Length: 121
Image (tube, rainbow, N blue to C red):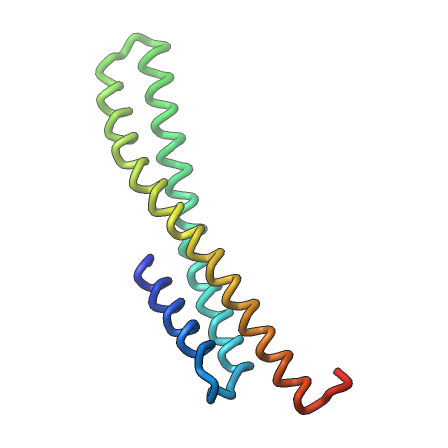
């Protein structure tokens, strides 16, 4: 998913740097759709991360409260899985924030194009 975000960023940055591109409204709509796809993925990863965190805390608390030290191994496995999920979610979140900035830049270009044809707008 991180590669997908980077690919989308590169595409939009290349188009934004182009002087001959003219289909800004289409790009705005396309980019918004891509952001929606990535937001859905981000929501799923947030839920998975939260559940792994909950499972880690639950197994840790149960093992301490009931002197079940064998559950600490299970808690450690949840922690081992939780750390990469947190890192991946962090990358997704930052990627979406960068895509929002690009969306705003595309929107500015759309507004500039509209002003060329309708200066009163």
